Length: 100
Image (cartoon, rainbow, N blue to C red; front, top):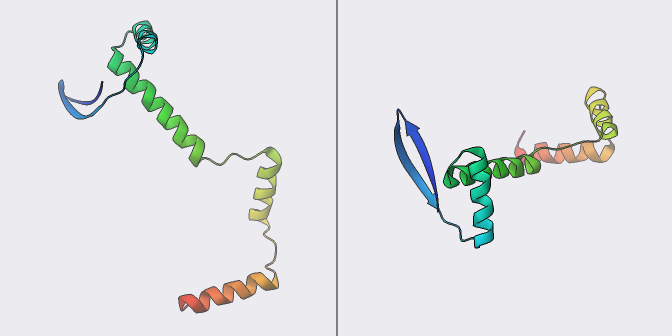
């Protein structure tokens, strides 16, 4: 069982509750890791889950480019290619459809 807590001037407000079933081997592992950090099991699990969640979100939201890709992207920003005939036609259709 995990509880999310918020501390306000030494008063703890419980905002939500999470429950997870684990086998005895996993629980022992988590308890050992928590003890090594000097944390309670709940505090350890919440912090670990938060770190994993933040890492997962960052991996999905951050675009990573190779050096070559980065250079091509910067070059295109600094000196964009001239629009082709099809691009100009698409822009004209868009403006017309949007009433611009």
